[in-house]
Image 1 (cartoon, rainbow, N blue to C red):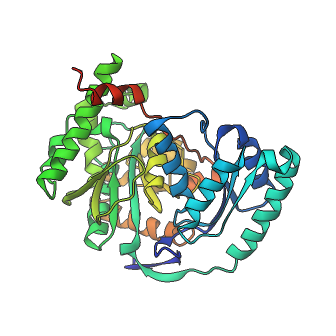
Image 2: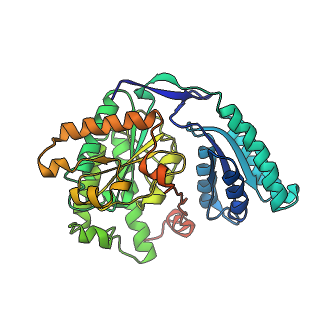
Image 3: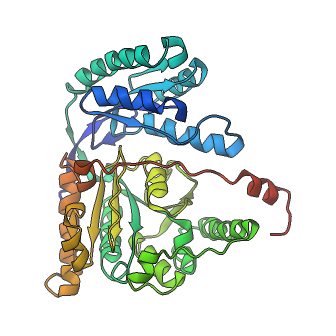
Length: 393
């Protein structure tokens, strides 16, 4: 991968690798309107949500943070916010506008219902698409890249091959001045001490260990046991949570851990960052995108096909059988490591080349198929209240 790539420089100084016009649904009851608007204009991306009404406290704050960060995302050129009523829609639009992006809002109740809302929305996004088409890529340093790291449908090959290749590539990007975000709190349990040992400061180490302790405490509060091993994980040869965690942390390479951030928060430090967010694939890429990642590296053993609507999600596998059976979902095959015809270093170079191509516009498999989804995690407000009151967990 070259030390530069061609990207879209935004008003807030960040650089995007896509130039989307986005329709953001502020709440679930206007998702159909947002989808219809986007369907009418090629190149427009709908962002639809599962909730949005009646949410409280940190749960509402997290929902808002994700959608506002999506509106201000560097891969986005312009935004239309669709709401049921004007107060929420305008609040979102005003907050997104602070990033310098063109943004308008539309309230279905004011527009006179579905049909009129769709027609007005199509008119707005058509103008946005015309403007976006005049914007051009410029050369920029790869130090501008913020890359999210995710693994899903892991098997016995994941930690040995794909995750290790991602870790080598992450180390390289960090050395170039870039930033990578490791996440999936439940899936570092049993290996968190390895990350803590690499913390840049004692405070960062404490924050990481506290994130894991909180996940364990929440499980006790709910009366469940954390066992993030699915049937596919077990069938793929993973035997324990610790084994899975040891493989998962390999994605973070060997660089010092600079910072621990919350769900969907933006890093304030360059280098390796950990985000405290749930492990399931769609939920985690939702959070990684909200943190500002322009690209996600998603290693998979048995293949999880999903990608993010705003952030190209590049899939790689080290399982030769998966590379063949799920070929239309795999962007980078590093199964040669197991076959013996490819070294780790060669696989990392292959991944870097794919990252560069995707950063400059090549579509990932998930983008071509339209396998794109978000799911904003809900916050267990009862557990937070329980913890704040200092009760025994």
